[in-house]
Image 1 (tube, rainbow, N blue to C red):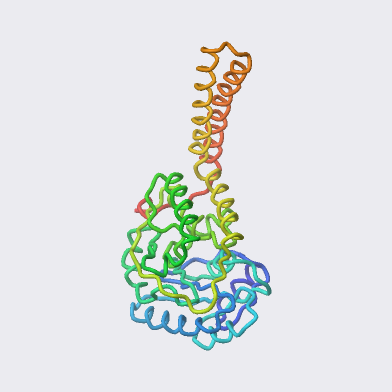
Image 2 (cartoon, one colour):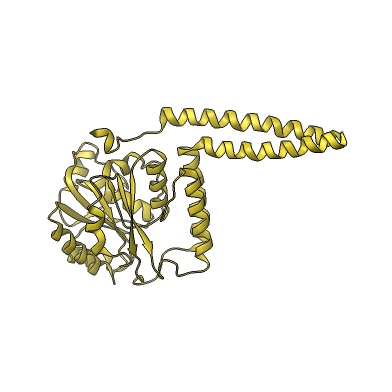
Length: 324
């Protein structure tokens, strides 16, 4: 299977991805940049985006390739991308934003990945600015700003909650946790394919993976543009999914912080119940105080055990500095 994948990956044009995420582990990665652009029904914009990426990447003089993953489009997205000069990989049906990125990263031949969207929202001309940091950082993120980034009063509260939660988990201030314009090491992403989201939370979960495992991440402010076409994000569908995936990532990457937070809540409740018992000698208060106290011990013990499991079993590729 891998020999077939390698053979197909070397051929220009269109590749039909029969198995999403077939990682070509046996193939060594050359120095350069693989630009991966996932697209679903973006025929109106993907051609101009690919042409702009070709122009910008050519100006850098770095070895590069452009991969567009057509994630089950029903329009001419694949044809437009191919005509603009990209290698096109097609999913037979829609599998998700993250699944598209994983497929492109799996077929990538270079040791750095650049991701961008096909809807023209990201400033492609800023890619060289991000590339200037790529040798010193494991991941470089274009931190969005401007009026189009905060276009919805409904989406803003959920975004703030997500950012606050991710900041707490990683212990790091994250200017933009889910920007879709970034550069990262190919092996960093492949290392965590099994826990990185298949959907829109791909960027959130890879950010958590990098920061929770000691990778170096740089944020570069960029302007965010109005998209061409209709957004694929559905607030009431995607926010619960994102919170679920982020919660799972917390348990995977930093379980002790989560369980110690539970233990702290139980400790406060135990103190309140012990105070109630001291004043009233109520049997209900006494039983509640004992139960909450035992819960403190349980959550602390489970957190320590989970962290031990994480240290022993969570994979980690070497960082840039550890290779020197």
